[in-house]
Image (cartoon, rainbow, N blue to C red; front, side, top):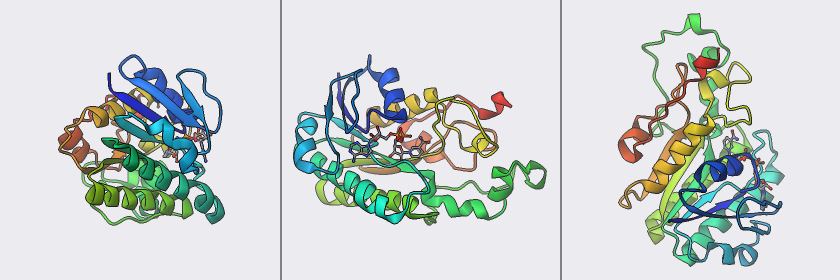
Length: 251
Ligand SMILES: NC(=O)c1ccc[n+]([C@@H]2O[C@H](COP(=O)([O-])OP(=O)(O)OC[C@H]3O[C@@H](n4cnc5c(N)ncnc54)[C@H](O)[C@@H]3O)[C@@H](O)[C@H]2O)c1
C-alpha cells in the first residue's frame, strides 16, 4: 500500500479523504488539532523541525494545512498559509517524497467571476447565458486571484512549480471548488462550484495513481455540474479524473 501523509488532516477535507481512502492506502496525518482515525502527529505545520519526522518514508503528501477562510487578511496568510505550504514542500524535498498534492483553490482565478457570463452563472441568472457557447476557465488562463487567500494559493502553485523543476518533485495543484459538509449545494453559486465527497475521493485517487511521468499539473476540483465554468478536460487527459456527480440533481 502506498504511504500517504495528509497535513491538516483534522479538518473537513482531510476527514473526507481519510474516510474514503483509508482502506486503499496507508494514511497518516499531521495537524495542530487532534485526530483519532489514523496515526497523526499533533504539531504546527509552520515548524519544519517538528513536522519533518511525519514525512519520513512517505510516497505522497496531500497538503491541506492552512486557514481555509477566503476572506483571510494578509497577516493570516503570511503567518499561516505561506509558511505551511513552504514547510510542507521543503519537508517533502528533504524526505524524498515522490508526489506532492497541494490544496489550491478556485480563488486563484476568482476575479473572473465578476465578468460575464460567470457572474450571471454564480448568481443563478441562467437565462442570460448561452449554455452551449461560453468559454470554460482553463488552467492555462492567467491567474486572477480575488484576495490575499487566493494570492497565497497562487504562491503555493508557483512554489510547487519551482520544487518540481528544481528538485524533481512531482507536484499536482488542485483548485478545489466547494467541498462542504453537506456534499450538496447550500447556495446558488455552489450549483456551479460543488465538489462532492465522492468526486473528491475520485480526484485524489486519480492524482495518487497518475503516471510518475507527470511532473507538474494544475486541476480544477469540481464535480460534473451542469453549470460548472471550470474546464476539467486536462484532468481527464492527464490523470483520468472522471467526476460522476452533478449538483443539478439536488435542484
Ligand atoms: N473546503 C473547501 O471548499 C476548500 C476549497 C478550496 C481549497 N480548500 C483548501 O483545502 C484545505 C483544507 O480545507 P478544509 O475545508 O478542510 O479546512 P479546515 O479548516 O476544516 O481544515 C484545515 C486543517 O488545517 C489545520 N491547520 C491549519 N493551520 C495549521 C497549522 N499551522 N499547523 C497544523 N495544522 C494546521 C487545522 O487545524 C485544520 O484541521 C485548505 O488548504 C483550504 O484552503 C478547501
